[in-house]
Image (tube, rainbow, N blue to C red; front, side):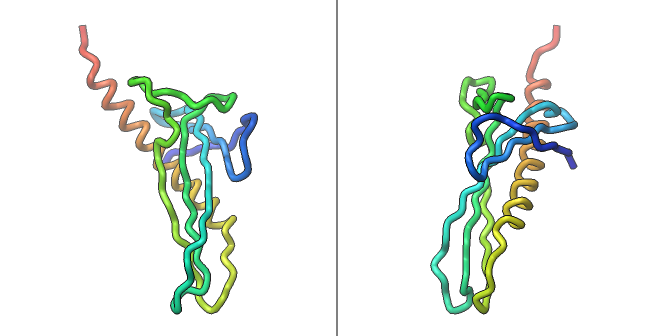
Length: 127
């Protein structure tokens, strides 16, 4: 599993976090995770529900979104959601779930970037 470390990047908004990927083919890549939350309507089974969304962008150390080889901005290289539900009116600890979601997202992005890097290297003709 790829490792990553939190870093300080200027101008991050609330619920935005920056990390550098520490190892593998994508070592040194800086990613920004943005977490948003929406509420779901409650049902008879679930008294509280929230949906967390994590969007990963590839940025530089100043927070500028990077572009890929095709010139496209890498603003949402990976997006995933997590639905949180409780019964009996129990509160949802969003912060704990958000931290887990962000960690899962950063690891997935590191793996995907490594695969793309390997494919790109194979596509370059030799000679």
